[in-house]
Image (cartoon, rainbow, N blue to C red; front, top):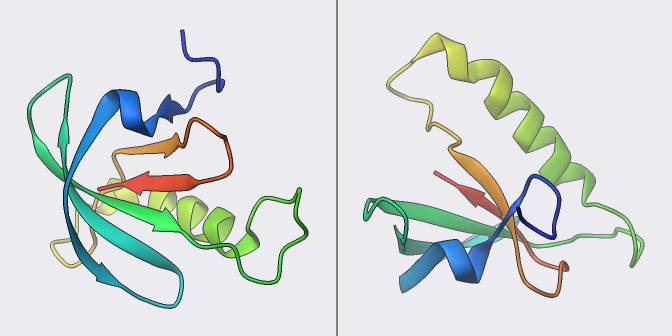
Length: 96
């Protein structure tokens, strides 16, 4: 069981292969799932204007919206596979 609750430890579960890009709300990496061998995308969410101990509101909204849209199976919407955290529990990663 993960010491981070239901969130996987990103460095234990995923191997970062290379950086794909960066935007206002995060940095995206190509990665390999160590458990399945599948290639995935990791988005490290950047905190913006949040208190140092608060969860980024934009990240919470994104997770909530992607989970709601998951049942629609639309080709233009990426599927959120998982949410992971860094070992320091500061970084939040969305797994696609």
